[in-house]
Image 1 (cartoon, rainbow, N blue to C red):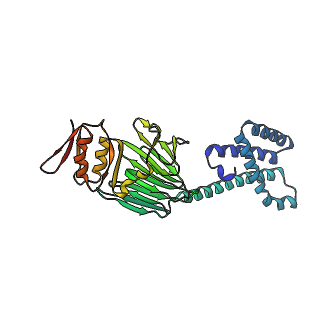
Image 2 (tube, rainbow, N blue to C red; image 1 turned 60 degrees about the vertical axis):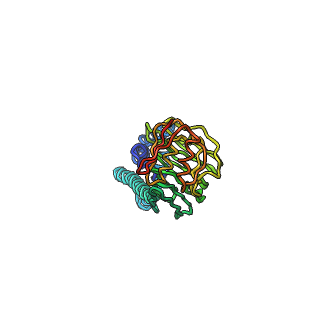
Image 3 (cartoon, rainbow, N blue to C red; image 1 turned 90 degrees about the vertical axis):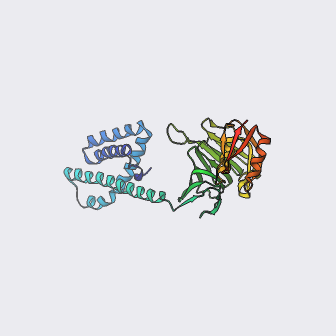
Length: 331
């Protein structure tokens, strides 16, 4: 630790105490100097942070000695002059600590400023592909809202709504982080999807490794260690019930909507309808059937085929209004 690390009040207080004892060693009588030396030695052993502060104080003290060397060689100093010189040295070290700390804070502030911010949004029925400046490729489903912020030491995505397939450019010095209201995902370079809705977040990995955290709502933060690390062909869900078990997923179906397909694997009917509605100008309605699960693949451009096939797969009926409104009702 150096002087730049003593801008926090508690750390600075330790540094000031160490400097006070050093000053007593160098600015008083032989007896008071010996007492101060002994007190400093005892104080250093009581806490590792005391030892750190003492080392930094000694370093700073020595850095100020050069300016006093010439005057020391000219003529002996009176006791009052020694006191004044000692006081100046203490103030010099504290001033140096303040300058270094300020410089460190400014440098840290500059380092933490974003290099670039990009907002990407899609409407109903709209899909977007985009190459980010770092080389990462993203594919957005309809009704998706995201913001990308690129920093010098990391890349962050805030996913407010919708689903995105990420093909992340590998950069070991800048991890890629995706955050939603449900949790956080962190990678270096891989292909995966994140689907964040009001009710839940789903993560699926085509290849690579992805760390997933659940948000701690009570403290509005994330734990130090991830809740799960996913690998090729694995997925997980985060919702009000917590983190699901890791499940196997077909890597070829991850982001299948890019090729015009909606793929469902024991997906709740409520979620099926919600995903279809991302593509429809006139959304479907669902009455009941929340506990029904659907498995199948359907063309995005052919919702009528889905509607016609649904009653053959699940105990539901489909009602159509004169205005073309589709309502799915559990039988």
